[in-house]
Image (cartoon, rainbow, N blue to C red; front, top):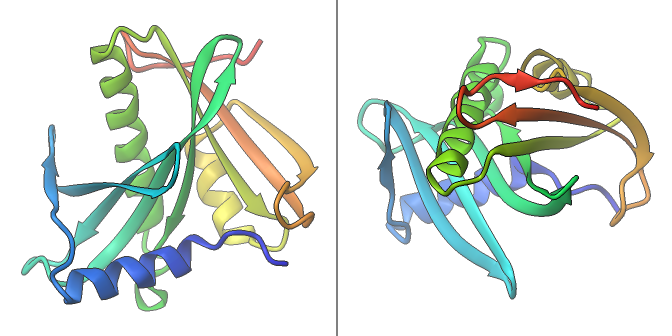
Length: 171
């Protein structure tokens, strides 16, 4: 079994967008970023962020966020991201991931949460995605076997202070 692939989620999201099955809302403080919330499984809320082309018909970058428990009593959000092949290596993934992390930290602070952890679990073979995570989620890097697939992976984890938006050291 392979690991969950955000690219497949992005393709599915694009298809639903094409079929006008999604309601998108603008993301506060980011005029060109949109979000969609859904429940893909019982007890799982997913918030998907997309950056679209100017006519809002095509996904240019994609991030999916789900709660993944708690770290030291604070919520942990797991992120997966993708960019269409034709738009890769242009900084789109880094930009949307940075913007989504900012929004997640802001939203947590608005809900009275003092700290937020953000993680990305990436297949060991996906070097490009690891570079993106390494540039945005600079807290810690752990090697593990991904739970669902058993595949070797790298988990990037960062800890944020929601009052300042600054990344904190992982202690």
